[in-house]
Image 1 (cartoon, protein in one colour):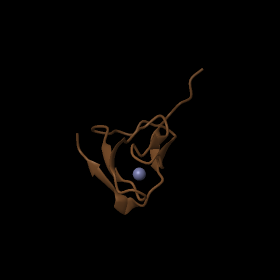
Image 2: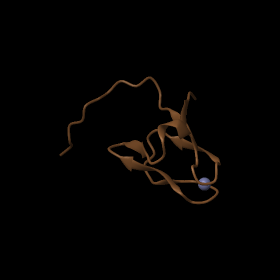
Image 3: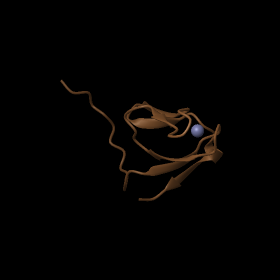
Image 4: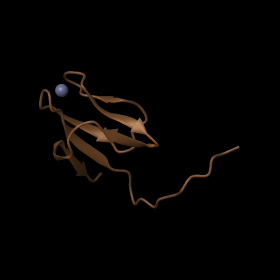
Length: 68
Ligand SMILES: [Zn+2]
């Protein structure tokens, strides 16, 4: 049995350029990350999966959407 989900039309998946608030490194985060995203330099958790979409754990000003 499958759960019915609302389908929200999205032209494309997006990527986020997220600057780590701790070390300043820029990380590319997939909009629909299915696992916890950590900074590749210091290991700080930047995003966690939530309902099929990544939830950012940094300030919005530290994240920039980039089209791919
Ligand atoms: Zn970092």
